Image 1: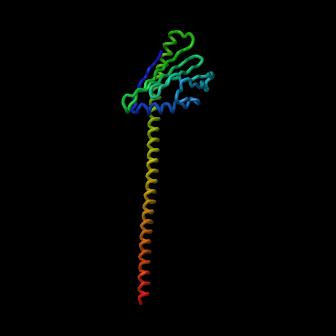
Image 2 (image 1 turned 135 degrees about the vertical axis):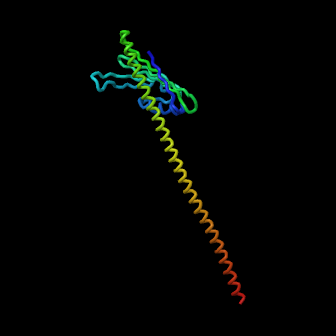
Image 3 (image 1 turned 90 degrees about the vertical axis):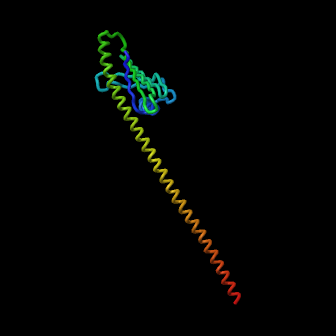
Length: 201
């Protein structure tokens, strides 16, 4: 039985999906950004219990800014997690998580009902935690981006200030050279006049 949860967060879908994938791909050493479908990883689960099992996680669906789906398979169960991203408007995104658990082998119907009830509760809690974490990640991404932009602007401002100082110094040097050239020309003129006066004595 599949269970669906949905929430709207106040960020553009492109930004939300980008931050989500940046986090999700950390689990896949061989993540292929252009087409990650088929990427797999095997994890050990139950490390702190008596039974340790392998959990194979595979990306089974991907569409940029729209879909991310994974299948998690253990010896006894298979879980399908489908994340859908929908742009509500330019500043908000609806995220829907559809999760399904498939038990392998024969399970009595009463046990199935109990498992579904427990699974539904876990799904709701996980989804709430997931949304809270995703919002924090997007906010952190925005803060980091703003900080980098501010640092870049400050650095550009410093460079422009240095350029201005250099330009002012060059202008002063040029004026000083012109003034010195005029003074030299005037001195040569006075020297020539003095020499002419001496010759006329």
